[in-house]
Length: 231
Image (tube, rainbow, N blue to C red; front, side, top):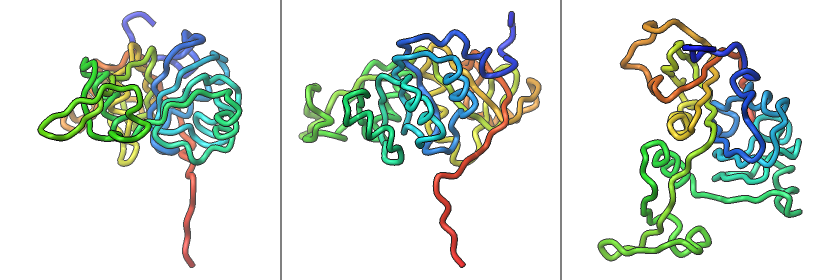
């Protein structure tokens, strides 16, 4: 689509995703995940993917469907507790896993988008997280060197977006999405509502369109992981 960031659907926006790529995927739990794009990735069928995301969905939804389809080679996450297939593949040696403290994961992604190659943090010092990494002392305290994360493709989900790619995230969906949007060579945004340029209030925009290369409108199931009710 010459001179346009707008794509008709997820399949068109992601059709050049290939085997062995590193994909950054927004969301937290099942909130704010680019679920339409994930389904398209299953249909595209790219294999041996490295996926960077806070978690790996659940067995039958979100990134869990790519895991079940044996498309993921390595998972870089901070939390993986809701997925039985994940545990099965990890224990069998099929899946490589890098567990990253949640704040460190967020900062590694932010650094990737900001052009910062690495940073020091006290999180993880004295644990397996720090194994094999440089430790340096500042003002009497030990810090571990963590490298930035960048991806071949970043995929995010927003509430509203305009045709230039300016994005607004709604409530908790403003989790890892803004950071991930900046850290991909190509960033694809799926939005619940796609509007004309100039429609959005500039003061409400969370991610400027300069970071977005492709955008499309898609419905969302908005599945809930757990429902706790009282009578």
